[in-house]
Every structure is written in C-alpha cells, then in structure tokens.
Length: 362
Image (cartoon, rainbow, N blue to C red; front, top):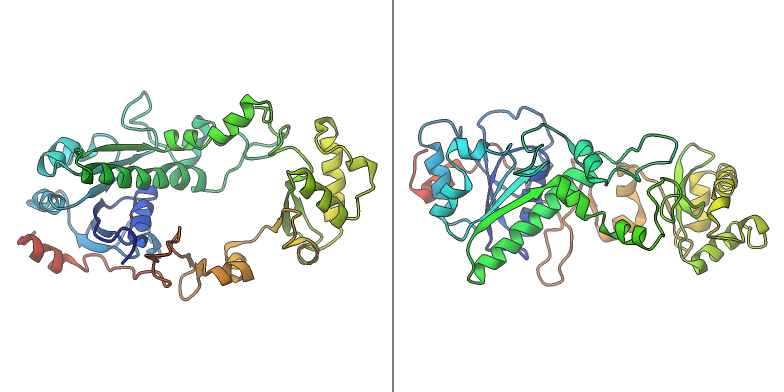
C-alpha cells in the first residue's frame, strides 16, 4: 500500500532516469510492471531501480510481443519509456497507437534533449544536458572546469523527478475527466527549470554569471573546506545572525577581517583565511564544535558514512541490510511507504501471473 495505491504503470525497460522514475512511483505504492528483455542485463546492477516492480520478460521484436504490451496498456494509468525519439513508433508502440488503445493513458517519454529540436536525435548523457541548459555553470570554483555530482542534477533531478510529476499530473487530469496525453520530459528542460531560483537571484543582482563571485558560490561563509585529516566540511551561513554565530564559534567575532560579510572584493582573502583555519583541525573536531548549531554547518560524508550518521539513522533514511540504498521519499503520514525497501524481482518473475491475467501466452 502507499499514496499511489491503485495506480498501474507500464515501464518499458531502459537505463537511468526512466527506471528511477518507475522505482519512485513503486516506492509510493504504484503497481509498476517493467517490460524487460529476457536474460541477463547488458549492464550488471544491484537492481535497486527495479525494487518493488513486477517483471514481465518479453522480446519486443518477437511475434505477438507488441500485442501483449498493448493488452497490458489497456488498463494502465501510465507508461514510461526512455528510448530515442521514434524508437517506440518503429516498434508499433508509439503514442498514437497506445492512446487509441487507452484514451486515458499518461504516456511518459524520458529523453535528454526532448522529442523535438535540432539535437533530438543526438546521443548524450547527464553532463551534456546540464551543460547546455546552464545548470552546470555554477558547479565549481571560478578557476577550474565545473564538476557536478554524476547523474543527480540531470538524469534524476531534471529528468526522472520531472517525469514522475508529469505522469502523476496527467493521471490526475485524466481521472478528472480529461483525456490521456504525452508527457515529454526532457532533461535539458527540467534542469533548466531548476535554474529558476538562481535566475531570480540573478535578476536582483545577487547572482552573477561569473563563477565564485556571487552569494551562493563566492563567499567565505558559503563554501567547502578541507580539514587537517583530508576530509571536508561545508559552511552556509547566509543570514547575518547565522554568520555572526559562526564567527563567535570560530573565535573571530572581533576580527575586523570578517566584519564585512557582503564585501565581495574581500571574499578571496576571507576564503583563504577560512581555509587556513579549517585546515588546523580534523573534520570530527569541527563537527564537535559546529554540528547542530545555527552556524549552518555539515560534514561532507560519503554515502556509507551518511548511512551511519545519527540524524539519518534516526530518520531511517538509508537501509544498510545487504545493498546500501536510500528508502522511499517523500514521507506521508496517512499512507507511509514500507520501512524496508521492496524486493527486487527476478527477470520474468511475474510472466505467468501477468500473462494469465491478460489471457495470453506471449
């Protein structure tokens, strides 16, 4: 059970953001049937993105396979596909065919560049999409090339999450009496849309296109620092009262070098002074001094460390039994997701059950 209980999704197996979207919907209670190739996957995985799904193993090029998928779509609420534009049409599973079979279907399409445009048929990956959309621009100091966390900003943030919202929105529209429709979720669009907070700050002059020169990427009080033991910490004391508390904690409350919080011309020297200071103690020593205060501090943790952190343990954010994985999010008071992640199906595990329901052999 879950907040999406009663929603049925057909997922045409792919890689990256499409399966992540299906996992998210399954985590929240949707019935997700993944149609995947028989046999071992091309890229070995632990299967986290397949958790909670039901597996139907089909070779979509085999006789009768497309008809089976169309029969499956007849009583589905949504479909997820992440192929290059035109591929589903060539298989005989394009939007026109599927919506003719089920006029209320939310037909979700996950691509990097979108269904139309000069780059629609070009190959690409997460870093390419967020580079073109502008979302990669601020990811790094001004004197080195930008580096973003792999897949998080593009494939997942700008892709899978926008596809999930789009599919759920289209399902709500159809259930309210509207027609089914295509959801064109392009990573380049979603990651550009996520820029709107920064673009709002740019319009007011708080952000500049020059990297390491704006309030969220330039100041000494909003940065990442290396500690004595080679590990890292973050500071984000944006508000004046938090900045003052940070200075007090660091023993710098009366130091004239740091009196002007927003004097951008002084930021390079102030950053250098902070870097020298934070390098004098280990990460754990800084945690003992600053963590839990309003100085806006956090250590930079590896995933395995994050899973052991008392705060995330108290919230049950990670599961560490077997494969390390994050539990479902967000959380709902009335229809909570399972505390333990749902099981990962074997390929084709539900063939007999699903085909019997459809009264088909293939």
